[in-house]
Amino acid sequence: MADKENLYDVVIVGGGPAGLSAAIYLTRAKYRVLVLEKEQFGGQITITHEVVNYPGVGKCSGKELTDTMYLQAEYFGADFLIAEATGLDLKEDVKIVRTNRGDFKCLGVLLATGARPKMVGFKGETEYRGRGVAYCATCDGEFFTGKEVFVIGGGYAAAEESIFLTKFASHVTIIMRGKDFSCAESVAEQARNHEKITVITNTVVEEVKGEDGLNYIRYNNSTTGEVTEYHTKEGENFGIFVFAGYAPETDLAKDIAELNEQGYIITDKSQKTSVDGLYAAGDICIKPLRQVVTATSDGALAATELEKYVAKVQSRTGLRTEEPVMREKVFAGKTQKVSDEENKTHGDGLFTPELRAQLESVFEKMENTLVLKLYLDQRLVSKELQKYVEALTAMTDKLSMELVTDYSDEFAPSVKLYKDDIYTGLAFHGVPGGHEFTSFVLGIYNAAGPGQAMDEDIRKRIKDIKKQVDIKILISLSCTMCPDLVIAAQHMAAVGEHITTEIYDIQHYESLRNKYKVMSVPCMVINDEHVYFGKKNLQQVLQIIEDLDVG
Image 1 (cartoon, rainbow, N blue to C red):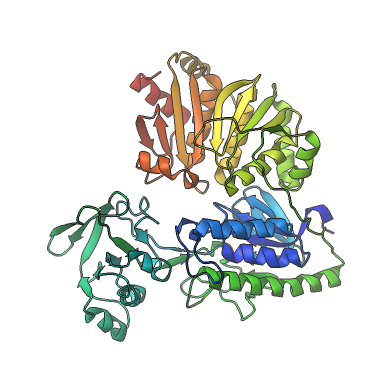
Image 2: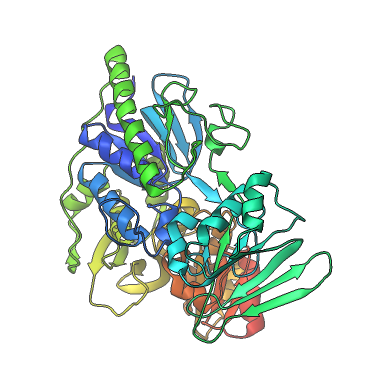
């Protein structure tokens, strides 16, 4: 029989509007719920600066809307964890959700992982997403009222959404790779004959850029070789809508539940999949409209059906979970030492028994104590970081935590490692979850000693660096190439007296992304001047520093 303390009624995979809505409904009904999210709670809508079509909400940002959902679910007792789900075992009454941070047992599973718009790959697409590059005409069309709009794509969505965009845009230009539309002729004909639409065929967009939005686009005709550059007048800008299709995040369900030809998960009218105990909600489902309001509706319906399913399993098996505990404490931004008792209260349940065992093994080997100082602001990510560090420091007397507010660091939230009240040179800005969990723990181990083994010649070369070397590494928690560079640079900071390595989750630091023109991760910046991209090991990083002679 499953251990009651480690058993959830429902594990929700995906922390966007669908998953958060389901968490609210389930916890209010006194079911124990864990919400897993591999990147950032809130989902794709967090990049939308203004939401004006969500009923009951006049106008707010996508992040403000989903932050409220998160806090509602947290208030009713939902547990949250940054982790990537890697597999499902649904054969027994007690289901297992496997993640990169351990396995979680539950009676029911909800998949709410969403569907990402496919990106075309032109230069500037990532950098200007949410600042001129958009993927949803219904969401963002009105923000380009009276402006020129370019649409990329030649399918049904491109043709139909271009017609919709003419309600707002001064003119719409459709740019497609092929020689004609690939959708039904009736829809294509409406787009071709619309007085406010121009269609350009056999053409590929190469680059976009601008200040305070987009004001430059370059595209190339693949048949004639003609390159066209378009500039707006000073002070004006335009929009780009990409309709290259969607890619549903249904890898977890492959070979388990029934999917359609496009990879979307098939559910019945109650959001149940073809597998007992597995439900789906939001953009991974087959649906005609992908909006926040439809995602929350799916989540609510799936939750009420899961309530019935879980109740039947409980009745049949006698399994019972602990009731969720309502939480009313909100971070108040005060400087304070956090007591051991408070630490233990907040830390329970965040790490699985397997992961706790691995962490305890690392802590036992540490030679020195460290203080993890938190520099927080009022954003939700600060609350996540605080809970994360509280749970970590509750596990060992070799780590303690301190909240600090009397600082001028503009890049909060962050956790900085101190030994004997001296900064070790290691810091993480954001929440070190996802693929960065292991690298963060190794950073602690290296800072406290004895640390990972290192070739003595390499160690000597690092110690011989006498000038100050400040390394910033911009990463994404979902990036599999980032941890190698992070571990290498952090190890150097732990050994070298004049080296600091600070890690930034780029999702929370757009100013750095713009400053260094970051369009891929990992990105390493040395002394705010020298920028490098891509995966690197310790010797490669050391060689770069020596060649630059900055150290």
